[in-house]
Length: 141
Image (tube, rainbow, N blue to C red; front, side, top):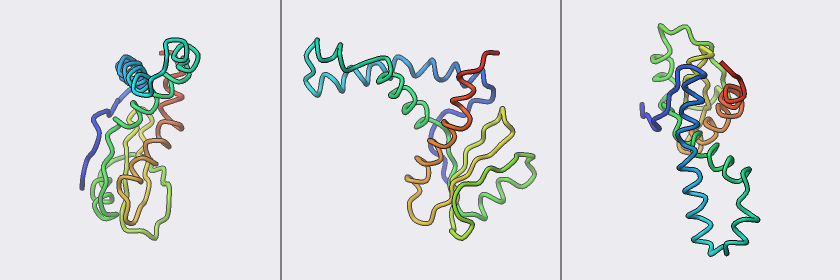
């Protein structure tokens, strides 16, 4: 079993705090990319909108989420003794699983894969961000 990523927020409040924490990095990355693309000050003002920075923030947040990956047997062993609901994505007919725990939903979300763990992690992070964390970011305590 392998683990990638550092974010594993346990509450929707921790989700919002982590999302806020990546905001400055998203702004900096966006600014540096625009600089590398040699945007003029005017072009930067026209093209680098709040929506562009928010997209960068979403991508950074999602890509920092902690994801475990391993064989289906390793996943089953890890899952044994937990009370998580399992939200599966992909096929039961492949040998490997990537998973992420959404603590505040008591859910573990999976994405199966055969040969491409990095692709499965990316897919899983997009799924988790879109189905779970995006809603938590819209909800007040």
